[in-house]
Image (cartoon, rainbow, N blue to C red; front, side, top):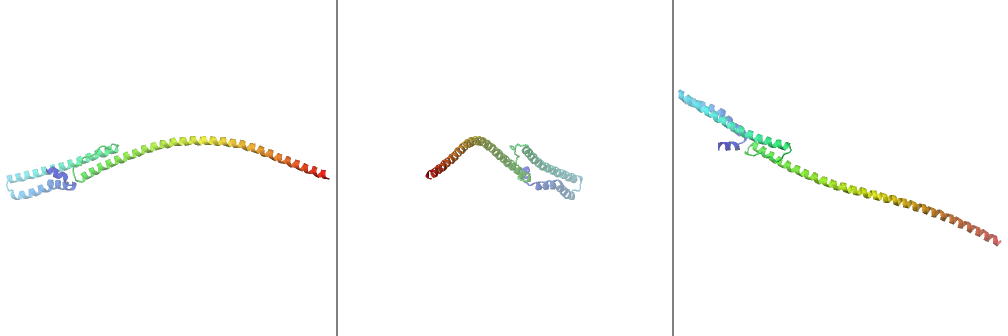
Length: 196
């Protein structure tokens, strides 16, 4: 029962109690008992009481240091595992003191960090999948552009051929117009001469 009470006290309270029991209480006992002890039996009783009080203080100190040490070892184990990428460990929270609060916060931090990393990995996988799809679409688009460029080249070649033919037709039409004009002029001159 005493150990569970000590475990639920704050760190500062536990250290104060250990100091009080191991240092101050023996001095008070020696002082009080020395006033009433006048013979060797009385001094033996005082020495025994001081020794028992001192042993009780040492026991309290050991219990307190053990609980602190266990908390630190558990916390160290969780943090080292997390540093190495293993987020499955957690430390036991056995007290409500400062170490218990720190251990609980470390457990929460490791759990949230693990969840965040899982979300990041999931998002990265989705991004990789989307990137693959975009690469496929890009390949299809490149192929379509190449086909369109070929067809545009063919259309350009056909347009050039049509243009050449139109130029030939235009040249022929211009020559015909010139010939008709020459014939008309010659006919007009012949008609003028015939009227004379």
